[in-house]
Each structure stands twice: as structure tokens, then as C-alpha cells.
Length: 129
Image (cartoon, rainbow, N blue to C red; front, side, top):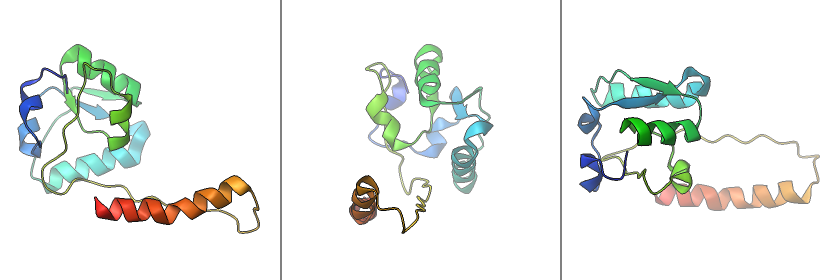
């Protein structure tokens, strides 16, 4: 949301707070993300009709800033936000997308080995949140 949006003063945002807001949704190119957000809103009993659909985080931030809209996007996008756009965590249990990793055991790449060694750390951090 824009950094000066009325909802920005809240510590956490309830899905119901988004009703009536100019809602920017992910376009169907990001099908898993869009489905996850749509399912979350449905589970929470909130019906929101998006005013725009976007394909990537840069478009999201641009539309949030220019249209003063709100959106639901992955937490990693927070690191890309300009000063004019802020995020607030959702109240309750937020939606998640499972991470799956596939690789060939015959691949001896040192980078792959490092990545695999860090997966357990990543999993532990995610469970702690």
C-alpha cells in the first residue's frame, strides 16, 4: 500500500480491511500465486474484485504508488519496495506456497552442494516464523 495510506497505521491487516479498496491482483501468468491469494481470500470469507492485474513486482509497486491501491504479494518483494510503498503483515495465518526442489544426485557442482546444505537452514527458519 502507499506509505501514507490509512491502513498503513495498522500493525497487521485483516483481509476484511481490504474490502472496498482499489485492489491490484497478480495476473494469471503467476497462476500459483494468484490461486493462493484467491483461495486465501475465499477461506477468509472476503470477496474482492481486482481493479487491475499485474505480471511482476515492479508493476505492482508502480500501480500501488500511482493508483493508491493495495495488494497481496510475497514477503520477498518487501526488499524491493521504494519509500512510497510499504507492507504490513496479515493478521492470522497468512497464505503460503510450498517450496519444492529437484536435482540430480549425479550433479557434483559445488554451488548445488552449498544450496542443498542451506535448505535445512531455510526450512528451520520458515518453521520458526
